[in-house]
Amino acid sequence: MTSPLSSQAFSSNILRLEHSATLAVASKVRSRREKGLRVIDLGLGEPMFRTPASVNAAAVQAISDGHTHYTAVEGLSSLRAAIAKDTERVSGRGVKPEQIVVTTGSKQALFNACFVLFGEGDDVLIPTPAWPTYSQMVTLARAEPVAVRGDSSNDWKVSADILASAATNRTRGLVLNSPCNPTGAVYSPAELEEIVRLAAERGWWVIFDEIYRDLIYDAEPGSIMGLNVSNSKTIVIGGVAKNFAMTGWRIGWAIGPEDVVGAMTAVQSNTTSNACTISQYAALEALTSQDAAAERRVMLSVLRARRQMALELLDSVDAEFSHPGGAFYLFFRVGNNTIGSSEAFASRLLDEHGVVVVPGSAFGAEGWIRASYAGLEEDLAVGLNAIASCLR
Ligand code: PLP
Image (cartoon, rainbow, N blue to C red):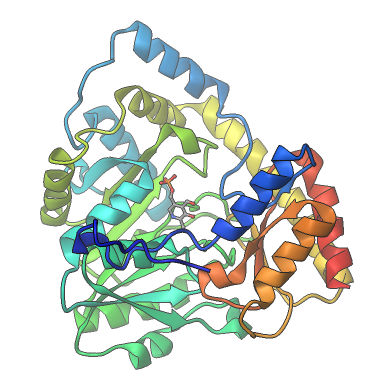
């Protein structure tokens, strides 16, 4: 359950901000740990792999070299050039460093994009199930998040038709995520082209979250920037957190029209300034070194094998699930859509087996569960077997 943070002591800025929907599970986990009981955590949204060794070494070197001061607010020019080159590698399209701002995690890029582009009176379409932070960010910008239910028979993806029928004359944009957290679904270029064409016709902003871009199993990584159709009002969000197991380094970025990126940089300059300088050197190494790329490929192959194991298990119990073409999540059905059904399943899994998963209700999909296969190796088989036994 979510709970509003409203209090007479707080300003109207956060009137509609909600606590995390997973608080109930989190407090149960804490009390299990306090009692010394084992917790098998398949609830995490991060790959529990080591950051590539050469990235760690680059950060230490940056400190030794005295790179411990401010950089330009928008980030090191060498890092922005590396992001531009990496984007060109997957999209075939060139971008100028002036179109890029480096941020403290992709979360800051997403927030600043919402803050700069949306405001009072604007509706923002959010294909659902969705990472709950999107609607909170839209709310903080005083705009209205509009959940648009995806098609559960097409891995919960939305089509241009679904978006068009949810739109009103207040619609100003949408936030799209592929590969998707929580479903693992990957939009095909054809599906994206339809959506981008519609957005261009309607003059909508598209904030496209590609944070899981390189964690893709059935195709080559692509980018919305590489499509045959384009919408000049597109902001691409990326980062190193998930692709290089660098969640704690907090480096993300936004790529978009120069004026939007300039406005986002102005917001950043008055809030946090540049992203951590040492982490920027680490991210530069991640994007440019062969060693880091090799370690990323190893992580991907481990995740691919784990995904296979998980899919076989879900198949063996006839579970209904979204096809996880990317990211590292399983999204499966546990019951009907009655309120509380996914929380009840998650609670039972935790109480009876010590396994943590996230109820689909947190993402707007009651009756479904998200489990991550990117946690600790030793937890996965135990966790999956517990899920299978509860599903049976
Ligand atoms: N976008 C999605 C869809 C995510 O799942 C997450 C993290 O869980 C983020 C963005 C934030 O990533 P970062 O660590 O770069 O802020």
